[in-house]
Image 1: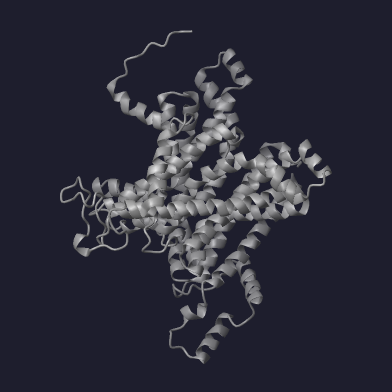
Image 2: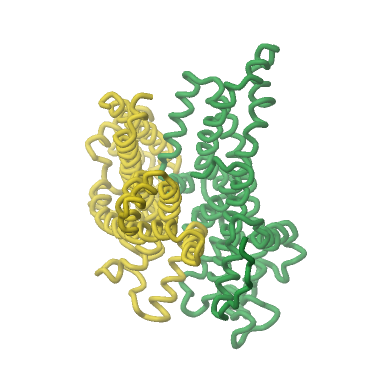
Amino acid sequence: MQRYITIRFLQSLLALFVMSMIVFSLARMTGDPLDVLLPMEAGEGERERVAKHWGLDRPLYEQYFVFLGKALRGDFGNSWKWQGHTAMGLVLERMPATLQLAGFALVISVVLALPFGVLTAVWRDTLFDSVGKIFAILGQSLPGFWLGIVLMWVFAVMLGWLPTSGRGGIRHMILPGVCLGWFQVATTMRLIRSSMLDVLDSEFVKLTRIKGIPEWKVVWKHCLRNAAITPLTYFAISAGALIIGSVIIESVFAWPGTGLLAVDAVRARDFQVVQAIVIVFAAVFILANLLVDILYAYIDPRIRYQ
Amino acid sequence: MALAIPQRVPWYMAPLRLLRAIFQVRQFPGVAMAILVFLLVIPGLFAEWIAPHDPIKGSLALRLKPPMWEKGGSITYPLGTDKVGRDVLSRIIYGARVSLRVSIEGIVVSGFIGTALGLMSGYFGGKVDALIMRLVDISLGLPIILVALVFVAALGPSFTTVIALVTILLWARYARQIRGETLSIKERDFIARARVAGASHFRIMFRYLLPNVVNTLIVLATLQVGFVIIFESSLSFLGAGIPRPTPAWGLMVADGRELIVTAWWISMFPGIAIMLTVLSFNLVGDWLRDHLDPKLKNI
């Protein structure tokens, strides 16, 4: 087990390393940072002075290692657009908003997907199952940004029940949370349904029924415990997906999180901030995947010895 | 066997039954196919002949006309006009071309690369396999929307950039699936015989292994088209996909976003177009999977 975790951990580090390389070179392709830093009429001497100050006159690989060394300490330099802020500081400052939204969406997806997934499996091929299926297929087909606009139009503009955008109390969270969570609800629901169907078919369930255990206990205790393994590990993946999905939803609802920051930073060509965001997001994503793998290995011993 | 007695269905069940018929996955998805043909393929191919107006030029005098069934709408502009007076219907028809091209080119390019690498990975094993699978892991671990934003800032929004991004995003899924299949197929007798008969590695991979994974490829491709269309329109929505003024559905939704209160039709209709197309592709994909390749249940 320890060996397996070590190997997976090293692989994750490698992935993160390659990610940092991609990010670094992509960010450098966005154009000469000096063009953004300096006014158009800056002279040659001025350019050199600024390049020296930011370390832009040294060879590219050296710049990369300087970047990597600092990145390991969480130092991505100062933001160019938002004067007086460090890139990491900005990301950390906006992070709680994103985590709050993603967490809320995750809660929505668990609270909705679990009962609906189980019930659609139990009441298979009934009207309830069909409605559940329609809901799930719609969730996978609706473009999130459009859903956001429609919900905003109906619930905020026409009915006036909820605020249109921005961050505030729980009422501000409902629309973006639903938008972000719906896709996850759909996917998780389908997963739970299919694994519940497998379990409901198995021998031990028949035995519990023969023993006379009440039906609700058979379903919610004996079956669900066995069927929950796959969906449980999927929640880790969806946590990563939710954080990344926040980029679009946050710009629809003007939610002041990291996703909105990312869009703004790219538009302003703020390398430092873009690098910080992408590395942090990638780290979260890769960490989530690592956790899933370890969880799997813990649950299913066959994986450890491969 | 009991006789099926026709039951009287209460009137309020009728719409539910209709919905159920549309979403009935196991049967042939006729409605979905028809939607694809009439919403995507025909408009995409023959936009010049079908579209009633120019999709890019509009006249400011005719701006923000509502759809024809609303007060003030006219039959000339059935779905209304946008804020610079362009016909929404014509733009949706031309937009189908963008979606069609992105999905075909994206799926073909990524499918080609992914299949080739997946075959190599599964067939050669060892170091090649390890290297390719690491690349797959990394590629699947990329926060793709962010990579897309950085990419677009670097190269500018363009059709090619979108295709490149789709490829970066999707090749790994093909590679992983095809590798898995190849691992089991290459142990079969006919591969060993081909090797004994002196077939080259290249020939074995593309002549003997490839035909055995074609079903998987078709199912994977169909299931991913919907995803590609959503991805492209999301990018366009963020201003990172197809550049203006090309009519793309995602861009049109973005254009109508601030006007949602006064002119809801600008972003509503293209959004519905995206939804119907993606929905249909998902239904067709599910059906194909059930019929061609039931073992792909978990994709």
